[in-house]
Length: 246
Length: 253
Image (cartoon, rainbow over all chains, first blue to last red; front, side):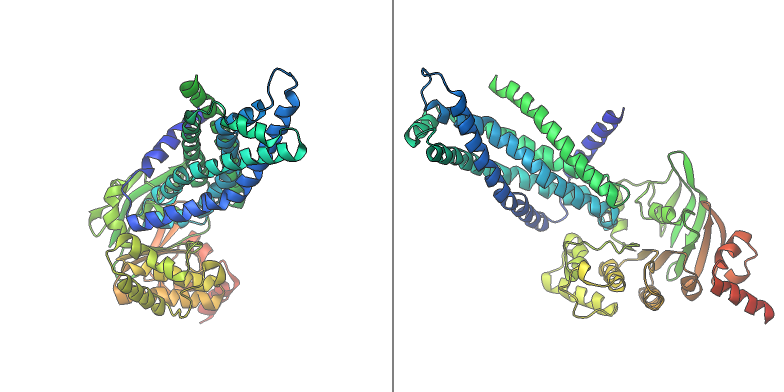
């Protein structure tokens, strides 16, 4: 029953987002600010995670490829496809669920408990739309670029570690990442990214928006936002893979 | 004038407000008083539409409010200013942006006009050279003043204040009370204030209603409150040492 209650309230909440903005200029400015906060503000952590992700996948694949019939350049191919199809869109978005999701839930939750949301409502402004829509639009617009950067950095990390450790010579690695490249895999990754961006922003905002109480409850909402966003990302990762790739 | 008729509100089966009826007069400071948990904040939140009432009706100058949808409430809401207990200033905006916010979102004013209005409102609440400070950088009393300036920005017909002097020192409380009183008379607003501060009650209560356990127990003015003859109200009014001493003094005189 509790799940149905939350599902129903989440749908109503989403319905409330898509209303005519009171002032387009302010919304546009908010979208740009959010793009900076969600996207540009995450590039550091995303690059760090991606470079180590690429390095570890390269080493592990090289370690497991012991069959002399499998050429060494296959490491580049495996790293490329793993990063493009799964690691960059899913793992990076899980990282963003932690970083961005908790920040959104605690920001909106704090606004709720300090009556700032009530103040917006009294002014006749739709608080859900004003606070959440710019975040959602910004995340949908900027996260594909963040994921593209992650792909590039991850594959580069693999290249560097393969060369430095001598496990995968650069010529083999480059041959591998060029072999049998399917551009649709990038499209698929972008589709996943957009869906995950929607999940992170709306689920986290939902938890923040319906916070009641004080600082303790804001913390709990923030934790719930990360947990539910992450679970939903994993579920939708499976659903999208089944629907689009299989 | 704001009229509430027989409004009731329950939360999870517990009755918080029961059949409250009252008229809040224009150009006067109307106070809702009562102890903590008596239902006065719920009454105010019902009046401004933050809570939907279970029964009864609320009207603003004859315009029905309680039965309207959120969209339909917009026009009346544009005439409402509210001062929240914790000021509810937007943390991400500086003082000027906070006061300008309703003007930017809801008016067609040009940038210059908006700035002029913001400076007028800030001057009116005696705040100078604070335009670029953020809420975290100003004192509690200044926050209240900024919140009053923001509430005034759209030239409201109705001003609601939820415990305007909570958390303030006695001197600042008096300044805030006086400010609210002044702007009420100056702009002929219908002001409704929630308070349990007896100093505020005696200083500015043109019309007072006493809420006890969710019901309206008494109504009158600051002049009548010390001789109300209502047991619950007397318990509330003379709870503090200062008020008890005042009663003793009154009796000996």
